[in-house]
Image 1: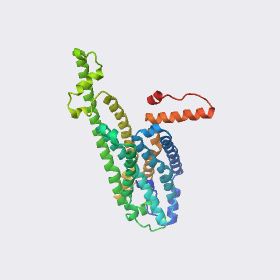
Image 2: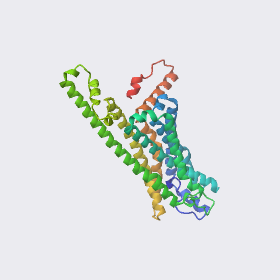
Image 3: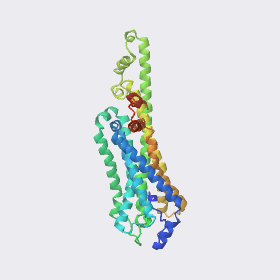
Image 4: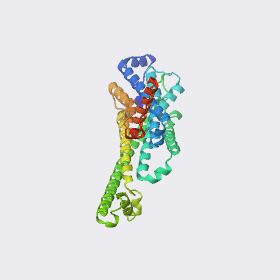
Length: 364
């Protein structure tokens, strides 16, 4: 993650050396970073605004964690990338201020990881303990969990401003002079690699559980159909009633997870939600893993070309810029956006028309 500010890849011997390094940075790099910052600001601001304005979005607990991730992406565009561009010029010159800014950048990166971890735990609890989840996981508790993710990120970043850094030889804000590469290697393993592997394991486990539940429900459904066709005493009953009678003969432990056919639709929804969050997780780590590996290589003394480093930096920032496009894949956010656009157009043109019905919005 040092790629956010590790633009001075060798320690400058003088201010002129630093200025020369800044002038050597291609203009296209500034342009691309500026575009990514703007896209990250606009897209994530829209996501947070929709969440604040639309009550339906706030009804879904998982959206709280999504907005937490959107907040870190918004800060990436409005804080981290601008710091990068300023640091290219060696500013700020005051060491305490420089150290504070660099710590904030690492905090933003780390907060994104733990927001994804909170999402993963939320999905795991929702699928493995559906009855408890609906009762215990409230919006207040989900908000506290999102805040806890930020708190954990702060604690992991705290060693950097407290002493795990270097005092620069020149009054210039150079990442490689200020930040210990040993510390960044620690961040890579503790905040990137280990969480990634754990989340992959959780999602693999979840899909195994989902497949098992679907097979159980299908078997229960088929058994109900056969009994409905063969047993004269239940031919006048609906299939739902027959299946409910069958469930009373099933092991109570199984009934907790497959009590009736409604679970089938619930699990289908959970599959879609879990797949969405798993894709978000994979996109994040595909974007950030290259620059994290580069940071580790720098610590072990491996030479990496400037072009490769710049490419990895830009790749990491695309995550924050493109995440809002992924949020549009969620039906509730897509419906909320269409509803807001419709209302804005109606208000602008003074059209007294009826907006999308509840059923229409639900099916979007």
